[in-house]
Image 1 (cartoon, rainbow, N blue to C red):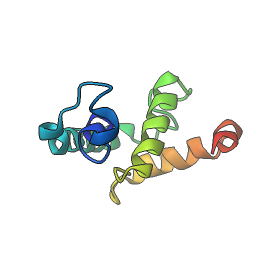
Image 2: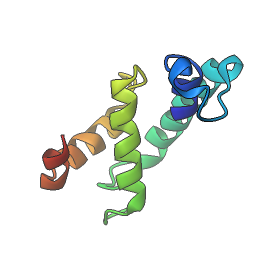
Image 3: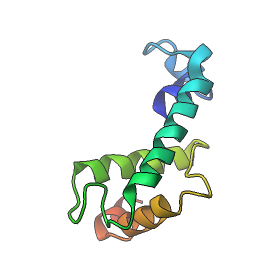
Length: 99
């Protein structure tokens, strides 16, 4: 997500600060979408990514999902399990405090 964003919408902001891949931006975004689709299939009915307890995986993914929503790379309509997971994460007091 972030590399696709840096190589496309915010290239001017990042091109002098970090290595950007404008020629690969669309493919990088597609790779992020494919990863989310894969995770959608793996999540099942678990409350958290790795099972019954929240881990750093949940915290990181939540941050990326929030970022993606801000830059036009939000969850696809068919990502119902990830949407459920995201709503659960967003309802936590700590997440609400950072919104």
